[in-house]
Image 1 (cartoon, rainbow, N blue to C red):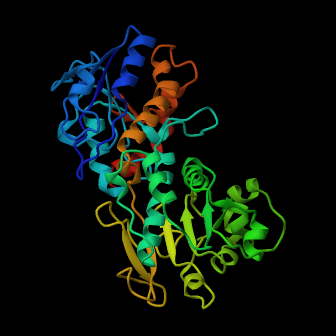
Image 2 (image 1 turned 180 degrees about the horizontal axis):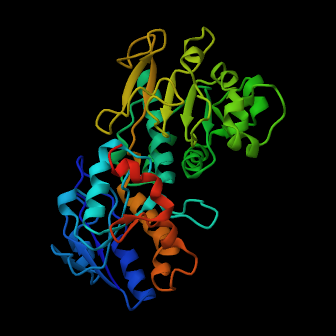
Image 3 (image 1 turned 120 degrees about the vertical axis):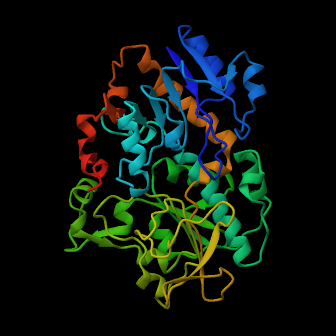
Length: 400
């Protein structure tokens, strides 16, 4: 089996990679029958020399590789026919801007495996950069808070080397006794929590967060039933919420009345109620002044996420009573951070973590006849057609 690591070609440049040099050495030691090549790149966080110094072949030609690994979408003219590809294709939700990509993949008889579709038998995702999105998103949220109130000026995350560097900068700052609400318990939410705990910010339960005053910063981490309630007022459970989201409405207003900062790391399913509405943000007793929307669903459940912001320009202001973007320095605005590619700001740490997950969950499947069905479940296309699991994309491919 011959594996290839592709050069990232999407713009703006992404410095991440699926496998670090050390991880490829481990791969070849664990699976001696595997061969590995790395496509030369001048933007990757690990230089060509770091690979060659460990005996990894660096080349400009991957045509003899059977399986090719990338991070972001690969330009259609760079796709090699009749190969197996792994990358984030951003097609499984029928994203219009990538329809041509999926069409060309089918035309070129490519087997596509999307990192998002790699899951266990219970459909729990196994691979992703979510933790690092949470880590960088939390840092950016505090960076924005410092700028909003002219309290401190943190450097951009992309100028620092690691999560440890981010935490070191954050721990030097003195925060007022603010309240921070965090949504989500997945990889993103737990990445956010890592940062808050690393800063030694006290975690409190929901009841205390809503009713008590504190002399130092505190945070609470909430789940779907903390910020949603049944329309009929009945007691519910998560299973009922996920099966019948139409029976629920947001209960987040009780948090927006007491929280100064909201760091959003939730997953928002189809049909679920909006979480933070314009009406809540426009209410006279709304306290929230900084929203770090790590989840970044544009025009989605958080009313102030009007757009995806960028690493170059991460902050904008939201004026609730006009529901429009203004400079974040506007006195009536809420500062919003909604960068949608946060892990790119911490490429070394993110690549190391991603490679470890890939080695644990994916690579063994190539050598154990895919006994756990990892590859089979993740495969989107085969023999120029959509696999049965992804036939729902046919109308998208057809342009309907």
